[in-house]
Length: 257
Image (cartoon, rainbow, N blue to C red; front, side):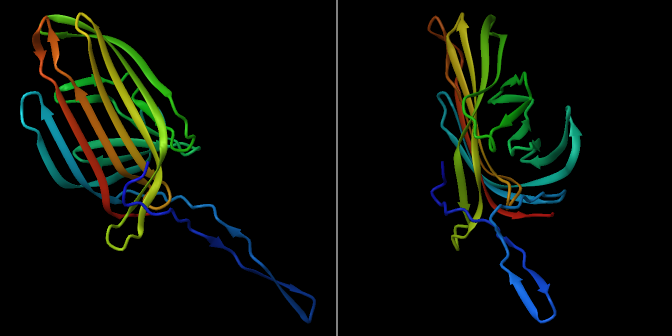
């Protein structure tokens, strides 16, 4: 999946020239090998990423609210230990704290303790979620969890499932010179909350992330969607539904290596 403003990806080429002397009167030059392997960047504390944020919230029976803003995410720390994992990076991002770890195969494990929107928040039974950027796996089951909530005096049984899929590559240009700003793999997390008794209801939440390992060392594009339909019982609305859509696109970054 690509942004409409995409360009072809580029690589950093490393060349090494070696001169060897042979004998007293003869000098030979060996043609250096060309290594097309991209080199990862490791952003340090103080690195900053600016995003254009577009958010749209809609409640049942009410006009949708759209807000556009600019936010700055800052890397607070790197190579720390958090919730059983080492080499963790902590980012202050949009009034939230994000922890992630880049695995040896370039999958990225992200810590997310809960999910939801519009006042409906559910605990995540397995907070460390591994996004298959490097392994490119699809249909990976993150968790399946049964729970019960009370809605207007009715106990609703819910089954919560989480899956993740590698969905391709994403690229972002500068928009002015059309030079590539960032590119990398993209993965999508899908959370489904299904209630069967006494009221049938299906709530869905998706988060899509695009990560650049070789230019920015961080995510450069994210999309989040949440859909909560009206919950009705014998024709009466127990809970009014709501939807939300949030997209963040990186506009500039300042990298400290």
